[in-house]
Image 1 (cartoon, one colour):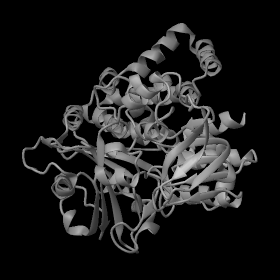
Image 2 (tube, one colour):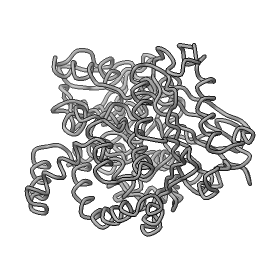
Image 3 (cartoon, one colour):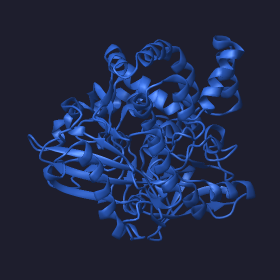
Length: 521
């Protein structure tokens, strides 16, 4: 058995890499093993359609990383290692079938004026929310960025009670438990405004009627206005490349095409890993697994009944299909040419449609009208395409990981290899309805099915890009299960990280940061 590292890490997603950087600062020797041919998990980029066109494989928005505590600590080092962001002032918009549109950027008065065109009362509400956001954000971010140990929870509750008194704390608790529809119906009057914000819930498994989802439309809207949005210069993998450079500069190793078949356990303690080639590697201090719960179970076998059952019962969100397009030019949006300037354009016409789409996907059906997220990265970062050309990043939400039928009654295929093309055409039909002539601008395309997403990265079970539902029964103290939100396991010196662990999905590397701090405190 090779003994060359203090800590072995299974998987090279950004949470793994962030943990590695923190541990190396404490003087520990790190080795990372990745089953794929390149590192980064969902945060990688490549010429998936044609030479000269760079596409983000899954994650595009790096705002959470740029605003993370990890970046606050290590930003200078990462910038020196080549990390570069490109800011987007015009963050997200929605285009509607009636020819209207609404966009949100980082100009509060412009946002309020845009909302005023739909409902005067809604613009006043928006201004009030904007004024309250700094205070609300301080409490919400404290919760989302905290571990769920007793001391941390008690400290946050005490601060919340001091600042907001009992009534204010209870109001915040009610908000955190509310569904997007409940909060949006209580807050706004215009269906267009509600739909524009509700679309963000679909990014994170929160259809309009799912409890606990109100937080995400609120945070995305207010945070984008307050801080703007950033993407990676040249591709989202600028984050991955910078992290790798820092790890390697400190003597760490990241080995690709190295699938871990088993985590080695002796006398109740994790001591190393066995790779698919039969080689074994010893960890002097600990093993960290950045894997989906069901995959962790396969690596360690039986442990304690409660823990084993928790891994088995961990629920995944519906899948996602990606369509990467190399384009002659940006879409000609019928509602307004101004839509060309937005990082994201959501095609999600109503909360009812979003709810139907979600329920159809959960039932195993290809949605009749999926939500389509149109990312326009080259409007912000032209370096991703040849001069004058563009890329589009289409995220089709939600779709089933396993197809049982078609809600539209048109697609007969029950396997993704056959269903991919007609489902992509259904999504493009939606884009075409809002931007006629888009198909004629396509130079090349690459469809990535839920099955391919999982094959490339086993954490994305069934194409679930967030590695597990964030519904209340599987969030906060219950992510991935009660008592294990800090990444501990029943096995001594074995730790769990990644999007399946609190605080969950996103590019903010919260799970990796919290675990790294825990192991070095």
